[in-house]
Amino acid sequence: MKISTRIRYGLRALVYIAEQNRNNNKLVRIKEISEDQNISVQYLEQILYKLKKENIIEGKRGPNGGYKLVGEPCEISVYRLYEILDSEVRVVDCNENSESRTCVDATECRTACLWSKLDNALTEILAGTTLEDLMNNKEMI
Image 1 (tube, rainbow, N blue to C red):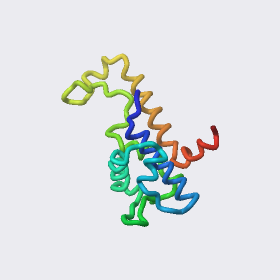
Image 2 (cartoon, rainbow, N blue to C red):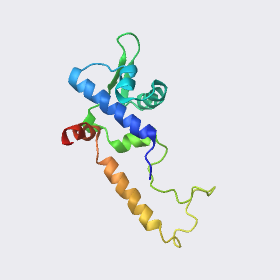
Image 3 (cartoon, rainbow, N blue to C red):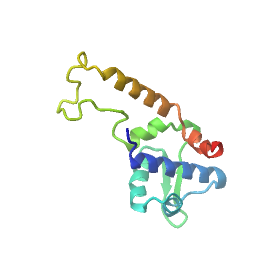
Image 4 (tube, rainbow, N blue to C red):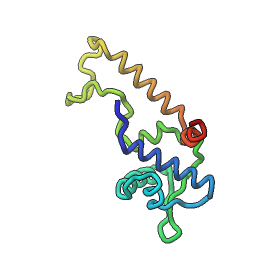
């Protein structure tokens, strides 16, 4: 399984915004995030637009503008962010080549239980991890 760059960059940007909000209580400009996290401004704009649309962050335009979190980092799960930034939280889409997108024959599929267990574990880990947990990872390294 490969995690998309949209997810990885989105999480890095949000952790940075949350840290700046907590440490300096200031709005964070997109150029600052871009330079600090080495992410293109254009790509960040797409990511931050989605997060703003889903009320994870709010933005203010103008010379004193920037972004800040709407809620507390401990209230924002990585699973929620994953849902916003990616289309589906799944390890394997068994029917990615099928037009119906429904299991061809789950009773005959010998690997369905494995993929289901992995999907459940992934969901549990993502839902049990908050933005605050990611912020604290810096202290654990």
